[in-house]
Image 1: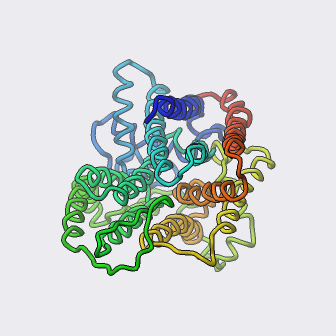
Image 2: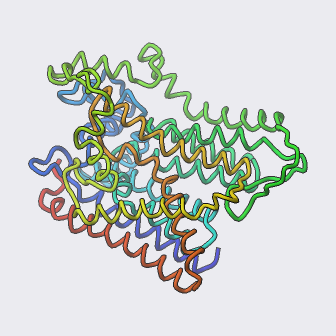
Image 3: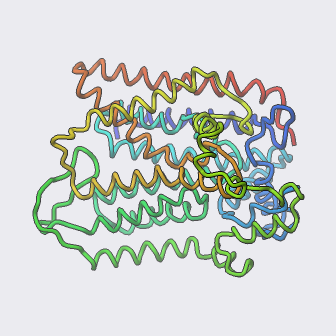
Length: 468
């Protein structure tokens, strides 16, 4: 890495850290009527790291201190590993004698740091999948400064670790396909999988993503040629193939063993406390019906009301809320941007996808087996969080929120940015103009994000302050 590249990386990471920190230090806590400028569910989630900080142990769903008022259930029955990290940040802050507001900001800074780590891995991913340096930066900025995604890394939640883990998993798989398996890469993959399994369920598609790619890796050519995943590598040779079962079992055993060490404690914890309820869904429902208010207990889902899922999606404003909140709604989905900004972001996505499809050489399309598997995994990673969110809203709790779709951001942006790259290579011949045009897109995305954060959201943050 050259000196200029290191400087650009430092600036990129620094910009993300500073903007995310400014949001983390400004948002309200609790239900700040009437604008509800507090992050979604943070007042309920913060009970868990607060409990760990105070009592130096992991709470159970039965602990009244972590029970959500009125709802009766608790986030303590779900993955608490991100909250443990937040409690550690709070412990460090506590050494300096900070008050309640300082402890909350310390917990939020854990999410900021996870986002910064993700930003680094997104940069590394971009270097593997894009040949042009300016397009690499377009991908990195588009992912990390996507407004709703940036927002996820500024408050107490488990989404931040889930997003970080997805970037780690994708990067390691690209590295493995380029250089092969090693213990160091297997360890990093195990860390990514562990963080994914111990964060948020809507990112679990990336566990399947890694499993499929690992299985496919050991399907090899007899001449020992290895096809990479990036456009710059690969071979369409029709030589005979074989499956390397020996190496597959060896590395699978190492990775599975490491993941079990990293995650086993939590699933044993849940199995013992909640009669085998590994994921906490059953006990969460039990707590809700035991301690919840009547309006919560008697809530009727859309499915139970007799409507179909298509009626949920198309008869009302469900898709509208998914669409704009995927771009950004700050506070508790209460702070909006301008309509033309939402239109610009949607146009950026749609145009990129259209360009990608237009410039696929359909008549002479040739892809290696590994490239086909790579695209299948990307599609799975895009579709899965959408399906899970639709299912949850239909059968359990109607919440058409774009933050639940966020795990699809990385693979989605691959196709969007790849579309712009293909178009520029095919249409524009002047290298200087290509670089200038790419920089204009980056500047436009950053300008819209800054407008949304500091013009649309911050006035409300400043008005209500950090209410404890």
